[in-house]
Image (cartoon, rainbow, N blue to C red; front, side, top):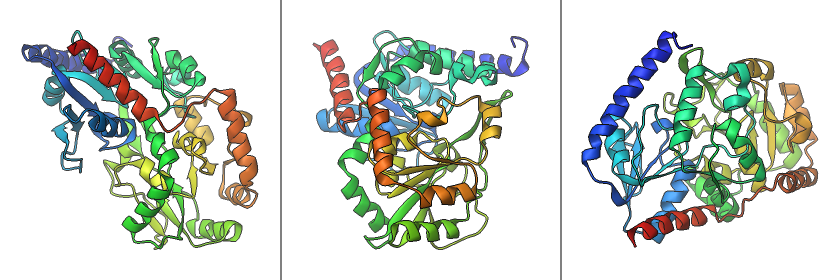
Length: 400
């Protein structure tokens, strides 16, 4: 692999980026500056970094909060300074910040200065997909290099369970300390369900009694065979049939929310469909998945970790995965066996119909409870507060 032209190219790019970081060391580190980013700059004000930023502003409004994004026209609160996610900007903003908070790996070649603190929040706590060394032979060399680089920069990774603590060394190639705080993005699912239920329906112009099923397939692609790809497939679900079956099973007036993965939503306006239907509402361009999930009555996904977020907050989940064999061939084996999960898994539309018709809420919630107990899951709605207090204490201790 050392003779691979793509690897050589990425290493040259990493050296160029490192050189820019070194040049920026002429500027001092600002003790009250914190820099955020999400999904390699493709995300807006979302995921774990968002909820940490909100809580930090409440606790310490004097902090300088900077967000790096590829689209600087995205909407952010007025207390956030928005900067472009570009090489020179990355080098300056990160080199002059006391704290970094990210939910994805830092670019290959990023350099950290003495006294800087990097908290990796990751974008999936407990998940389905094989990541890092769990991918086996499907783990590309460049992905290993980038993972190792990010892990060596990281001071802490947040965790929500004994399970996460156990898998991080192979999953993220990280062997340092974890912060068992839970997931900041889950806080609103636990604390603000009623508020989100109303807010999203008002925003979408829907009656308050409308029931919502969120369809949110996961990211496909990554560093495959030396090329970074993000892939979207046309869902093979008959959404009209799905709505009819939901009405028959649960009653009420149902609509479907469609949500692309953030890295795909940055490149596409909406989810591609076999046919249009006014009962299908695309929310891919809404900045934060957690708000949409918190307003939903049911989640249908394939391999997205949002299934666990929903489950821990008491939201029903059904898995629809009609490309399991192909996905495993590209990504590696899954992290869980079927009988270890609290979810039903459908591999075709007929099986999906059966899962809906046979869905037992009581049994589902009991399965989730057993899963939480077995893996010592902590999601108590206080993660953002705990992490923000930890960061503020670190800053205050150094200042004193």
